[in-house]
Length: 220
Image (cartoon, rainbow, N blue to C red; front, side, top):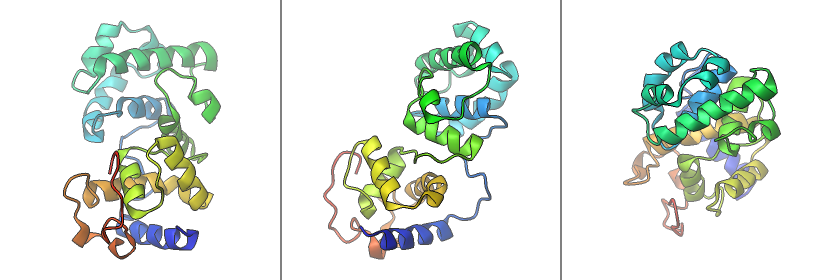
């Protein structure tokens, strides 16, 4: 797809989902530490579920030091309503420990440093950099971003890292900070995994899924 067409599609989506002021994020936070932990907890869990528990979690553990020193069972009790809570509890405590031991209790603001934290991959690091620091070195690709990007025709790839590279090549850097937010909104509201609402789609005229030219694959 040509950049000019991709940008026209993106502008139409931004107009549709431009009803929320900056910063555009789905889980509340007041510090990079909270942004990091909240994003780590959101994996394979709804943002609404995470939002319901973060106030209590950060009241109990207001800093990485408290989280790192807490018994694992106590952390699990705080996040028990989330999917994969055993693994997530281990990861957030280990990540907090590394923040304390290697970064003076501060969340680092580079991709290379963030991905060294336990449980943190490129998607989480991209979200933390963009939301907590206003730094866009890449584009976070979750299931919504992947599905919408493939259906529209922004990419033919199925692996998140390769989808990210295609999006970064297709869109100028000043768009990167909003792409994740806009495509997630569209994936939740209209371009759903099951029964997508194509007649309501503002970009259906440019969408290969709507026109029946999309070859379905994993995550379609």
